[in-house]
Image (cartoon, rainbow, N blue to C red; front, side, top):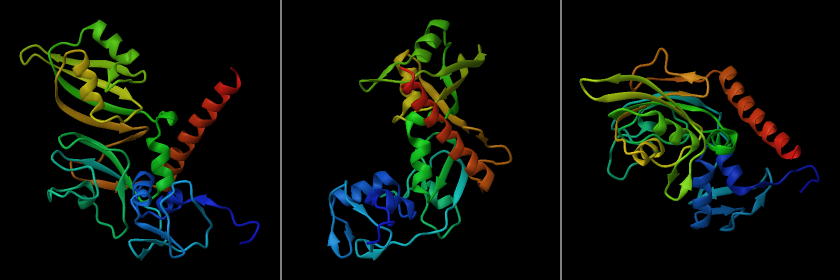
Length: 256
Protein backbone atom coordinates (compact mmCIF):
# COMPACT_ATOMS: atom_id res chain seq x y z
CA UNK A 1 0.00 0.00 0.00
CA UNK A 2 1.39 3.40 -0.97
CA UNK A 3 1.97 6.08 1.66
CA UNK A 4 -0.56 8.37 -0.03
CA UNK A 5 -3.32 5.72 -0.11
CA UNK A 6 -5.73 6.91 2.61
CA UNK A 7 -7.72 4.51 4.73
CA UNK A 8 -11.45 4.88 5.35
CA UNK A 9 -13.89 3.08 7.63
CA UNK A 10 -15.49 0.16 5.84
CA UNK A 11 -19.08 1.27 6.47
CA UNK A 12 -18.31 4.72 5.04
CA UNK A 13 -16.79 3.20 1.90
CA UNK A 14 -19.81 0.92 1.38
CA UNK A 15 -22.24 3.84 1.81
CA UNK A 16 -20.21 6.02 -0.58
CA UNK A 17 -20.64 3.44 -3.36
CA UNK A 18 -24.41 3.91 -3.17
CA UNK A 19 -25.07 0.32 -2.09
CA UNK A 20 -26.94 1.39 1.06
CA UNK A 21 -26.91 3.91 3.91
CA UNK A 22 -24.07 3.92 6.44
CA UNK A 23 -26.39 2.60 9.16
CA UNK A 24 -27.45 -0.31 6.94
CA UNK A 25 -23.77 -0.94 6.06
CA UNK A 26 -22.94 -1.19 9.77
CA UNK A 27 -25.73 -3.73 10.21
CA UNK A 28 -24.45 -5.80 7.25
CA UNK A 29 -20.92 -5.79 8.70
CA UNK A 30 -22.04 -6.78 12.20
CA UNK A 31 -24.20 -9.64 10.91
CA UNK A 32 -21.44 -11.19 8.79
CA UNK A 33 -22.43 -10.29 5.24
CA UNK A 34 -19.26 -8.40 4.25
CA UNK A 35 -15.85 -9.62 3.08
CA UNK A 36 -12.76 -7.54 2.29
CA UNK A 37 -10.20 -9.13 -0.04
CA UNK A 38 -11.87 -12.49 0.62
CA UNK A 39 -11.82 -12.19 4.42
CA UNK A 40 -14.99 -11.93 6.52
CA UNK A 41 -15.11 -8.64 8.46
CA UNK A 42 -17.48 -8.03 11.40
CA UNK A 43 -15.65 -5.21 13.24
CA UNK A 44 -17.12 -1.74 12.63
CA UNK A 45 -13.79 0.00 13.20
CA UNK A 46 -12.14 -1.79 10.26
CA UNK A 47 -10.45 0.54 7.77
CA UNK A 48 -9.82 -0.22 4.10
CA UNK A 49 -7.95 1.46 1.25
CA UNK A 50 -9.23 2.42 -2.19
CA UNK A 51 -8.00 -0.79 -3.82
CA UNK A 52 -9.77 -3.16 -1.40
CA UNK A 53 -12.14 -5.71 -2.96
CA UNK A 54 -15.38 -5.44 -0.97
CA UNK A 55 -18.14 -8.00 -1.39
CA UNK A 56 -21.58 -8.22 0.20
CA UNK A 57 -23.03 -11.73 0.19
CA UNK A 58 -20.52 -12.58 -2.54
CA UNK A 59 -21.46 -9.62 -4.76
CA UNK A 60 -18.70 -7.10 -5.47
CA UNK A 61 -19.80 -3.54 -4.91
CA UNK A 62 -18.86 -0.86 -7.40
CA UNK A 63 -18.92 2.90 -7.30
CA UNK A 64 -21.97 4.40 -9.02
CA UNK A 65 -22.72 7.88 -10.30
CA UNK A 66 -24.38 9.93 -7.58
CA UNK A 67 -28.10 10.60 -7.98
CA UNK A 68 -30.32 12.89 -5.89
CA UNK A 69 -34.12 13.06 -5.99
CA UNK A 70 -36.83 15.08 -4.27
CA UNK A 71 -40.05 13.07 -3.98
CA UNK A 72 -43.56 14.24 -3.06
CA UNK A 73 -44.38 11.19 -0.98
CA UNK A 74 -48.03 10.09 -1.12
CA UNK A 75 -49.98 8.52 1.74
CA UNK A 76 -49.85 4.74 2.23
CA UNK A 77 -46.33 4.36 0.84
CA UNK A 78 -43.49 2.87 2.93
CA UNK A 79 -40.31 4.92 3.44
CA UNK A 80 -37.98 2.01 2.81
CA UNK A 81 -36.17 0.20 0.01
CA UNK A 82 -38.13 -3.02 0.62
CA UNK A 83 -41.29 -4.11 2.42
CA UNK A 84 -41.87 -7.75 3.38
CA UNK A 85 -45.64 -7.16 3.24
CA UNK A 86 -45.29 -6.23 -0.45
CA UNK A 87 -46.60 -2.68 0.08
CA UNK A 88 -45.41 0.07 -2.26
CA UNK A 89 -42.17 1.77 -1.19
CA UNK A 90 -40.80 5.22 -2.00
CA UNK A 91 -38.09 3.58 -4.12
CA UNK A 92 -40.78 1.99 -6.32
CA UNK A 93 -41.93 5.48 -7.33
CA UNK A 94 -38.60 6.54 -8.88
CA UNK A 95 -37.40 5.32 -12.27
CA UNK A 96 -33.69 4.60 -11.91
CA UNK A 97 -31.34 1.63 -12.26
CA UNK A 98 -29.21 2.95 -9.39
CA UNK A 99 -29.67 1.55 -5.88
CA UNK A 100 -31.09 4.59 -4.05
CA UNK A 101 -32.52 4.87 -0.54
CA UNK A 102 -34.48 7.47 1.43
CA UNK A 103 -32.74 10.10 3.57
CA UNK A 104 -34.60 9.79 6.87
CA UNK A 105 -38.20 8.66 6.91
CA UNK A 106 -41.82 9.72 6.68
CA UNK A 107 -44.55 7.61 8.27
CA UNK A 108 -46.85 5.43 6.16
CA UNK A 109 -49.69 7.97 6.37
CA UNK A 110 -47.50 11.10 6.22
CA UNK A 111 -47.09 12.98 2.93
CA UNK A 112 -44.59 15.45 1.58
CA UNK A 113 -40.94 16.18 0.86
CA UNK A 114 -38.46 13.29 0.93
CA UNK A 115 -34.95 13.10 -0.50
CA UNK A 116 -33.61 9.85 -1.98
CA UNK A 117 -30.02 9.28 -3.06
CA UNK A 118 -27.18 6.79 -3.41
CA UNK A 119 -24.71 9.24 -1.80
CA UNK A 120 -24.04 7.90 1.68
CA UNK A 121 -21.98 10.84 2.92
CA UNK A 122 -24.63 13.31 1.75
CA UNK A 123 -27.39 11.29 3.47
CA UNK A 124 -25.41 11.14 6.70
CA UNK A 125 -24.83 14.90 6.75
CA UNK A 126 -28.52 15.65 6.21
CA UNK A 127 -29.73 13.19 8.85
CA UNK A 128 -27.29 14.07 11.62
CA UNK A 129 -29.13 16.25 14.19
CA UNK A 130 -25.94 18.23 14.92
CA UNK A 131 -26.15 19.73 11.43
CA UNK A 132 -29.59 21.18 12.26
CA UNK A 133 -31.18 20.91 8.82
CA UNK A 134 -34.69 22.36 9.20
CA UNK A 135 -37.71 20.29 8.26
CA UNK A 136 -41.06 22.11 8.06
CA UNK A 137 -44.32 20.21 8.65
CA UNK A 138 -47.98 21.16 8.55
CA UNK A 139 -49.97 19.20 11.13
CA UNK A 140 -53.75 19.07 11.30
CA UNK A 141 -54.66 18.49 14.94
CA UNK A 142 -57.86 18.18 16.94
CA UNK A 143 -58.83 21.19 19.04
CA UNK A 144 -57.06 24.44 19.87
CA UNK A 145 -53.32 24.71 20.53
CA UNK A 146 -53.07 27.15 23.44
CA UNK A 147 -50.10 29.52 24.01
CA UNK A 148 -48.77 27.51 26.99
CA UNK A 149 -48.76 24.36 24.82
CA UNK A 150 -46.84 26.20 22.08
CA UNK A 151 -44.20 27.32 24.59
CA UNK A 152 -43.88 23.78 25.96
CA UNK A 153 -43.41 22.31 22.48
CA UNK A 154 -40.90 24.99 21.46
CA UNK A 155 -38.76 24.42 24.56
CA UNK A 156 -38.68 20.67 23.98
CA UNK A 157 -40.67 17.74 25.35
CA UNK A 158 -39.74 14.25 26.53
CA UNK A 159 -40.25 11.56 23.87
CA UNK A 160 -39.29 7.97 24.71
CA UNK A 161 -37.15 9.23 27.60
CA UNK A 162 -35.25 11.84 25.55
CA UNK A 163 -35.96 15.57 25.35
CA UNK A 164 -36.49 16.99 21.87
CA UNK A 165 -34.44 19.96 20.68
CA UNK A 166 -36.00 23.41 20.47
CA UNK A 167 -38.57 23.80 17.69
CA UNK A 168 -40.72 26.51 16.10
CA UNK A 169 -44.49 26.25 16.35
CA UNK A 170 -46.97 28.50 14.54
CA UNK A 171 -50.76 28.11 14.43
CA UNK A 172 -51.81 28.84 10.84
CA UNK A 173 -55.57 28.39 11.14
CA UNK A 174 -58.31 27.24 13.49
CA UNK A 175 -61.54 25.76 12.09
CA UNK A 176 -64.18 26.38 14.77
CA UNK A 177 -66.84 24.26 13.06
CA UNK A 178 -64.58 21.19 12.70
CA UNK A 179 -62.65 22.04 15.90
CA UNK A 180 -59.30 21.44 14.17
CA UNK A 181 -56.12 23.51 13.91
CA UNK A 182 -53.48 23.70 11.19
CA UNK A 183 -50.06 24.08 12.80
CA UNK A 184 -46.65 24.71 11.20
CA UNK A 185 -43.86 22.82 12.96
CA UNK A 186 -40.15 23.36 12.26
CA UNK A 187 -37.71 20.79 13.67
CA UNK A 188 -34.24 19.56 12.74
CA UNK A 189 -34.36 16.12 14.32
CA UNK A 190 -35.96 12.98 12.94
CA UNK A 191 -36.97 10.77 15.84
CA UNK A 192 -39.52 8.01 15.19
CA UNK A 193 -43.04 9.55 14.99
CA UNK A 194 -41.53 12.74 16.43
CA UNK A 195 -44.15 15.32 15.42
CA UNK A 196 -47.06 13.07 16.38
CA UNK A 197 -45.48 12.29 19.76
CA UNK A 198 -44.72 15.96 20.38
CA UNK A 199 -48.41 16.81 20.04
CA UNK A 200 -49.41 13.76 22.09
CA UNK A 201 -47.24 15.11 24.92
CA UNK A 202 -49.53 18.16 25.19
CA UNK A 203 -52.71 16.11 24.76
CA UNK A 204 -53.32 16.69 21.06
CA UNK A 205 -53.95 14.11 18.31
CA UNK A 206 -52.53 14.58 14.82
CA UNK A 207 -55.15 13.87 12.14
CA UNK A 208 -52.92 14.56 9.12
CA UNK A 209 -49.23 15.32 8.71
CA UNK A 210 -47.42 16.78 5.71
CA UNK A 211 -43.76 17.78 5.29
CA UNK A 212 -43.58 21.00 3.28
CA UNK A 213 -39.85 21.67 3.21
CA UNK A 214 -36.40 20.21 3.81
CA UNK A 215 -33.99 23.13 4.30
CA UNK A 216 -34.69 25.37 1.25
CA UNK A 217 -36.28 22.59 -0.84
CA UNK A 218 -40.05 22.73 -1.26
CA UNK A 219 -42.58 20.87 -3.39
CA UNK A 220 -43.46 23.60 -5.87
CA UNK A 221 -44.27 22.12 -9.28
CA UNK A 222 -44.84 18.62 -7.87
CA UNK A 223 -48.04 16.74 -7.08
CA UNK A 224 -48.38 13.69 -4.85
CA UNK A 225 -46.28 10.82 -6.27
CA UNK A 226 -44.14 13.11 -8.47
CA UNK A 227 -40.40 13.57 -8.12
CA UNK A 228 -37.56 15.51 -9.67
CA UNK A 229 -33.78 15.32 -9.70
CA UNK A 230 -31.93 17.81 -7.52
CA UNK A 231 -29.67 19.96 -9.66
CA UNK A 232 -25.92 20.29 -8.89
CA UNK A 233 -26.43 23.77 -7.39
CA UNK A 234 -29.02 22.44 -4.91
CA UNK A 235 -26.78 19.52 -3.89
CA UNK A 236 -23.87 21.91 -3.41
CA UNK A 237 -26.05 24.24 -1.33
CA UNK A 238 -27.09 21.36 0.95
CA UNK A 239 -23.46 20.31 1.43
CA UNK A 240 -22.52 23.92 2.23
CA UNK A 241 -25.46 24.22 4.63
CA UNK A 242 -24.37 21.21 6.68
CA UNK A 243 -20.69 22.19 6.58
CA UNK A 244 -21.52 25.75 7.71
CA UNK A 245 -23.52 24.34 10.64
CA UNK A 246 -20.60 22.11 11.61
CA UNK A 247 -18.14 25.02 11.46
CA UNK A 248 -20.47 27.16 13.56
CA UNK A 249 -20.78 24.41 16.18
CA UNK A 250 -17.00 23.98 16.37
CA UNK A 251 -16.62 27.75 16.73
CA UNK A 252 -19.02 27.83 19.66
CA UNK A 253 -17.13 25.04 21.40
CA UNK A 254 -13.84 26.83 20.89
CA UNK A 255 -15.21 30.00 22.50
CA UNK A 256 -16.40 28.27 25.66
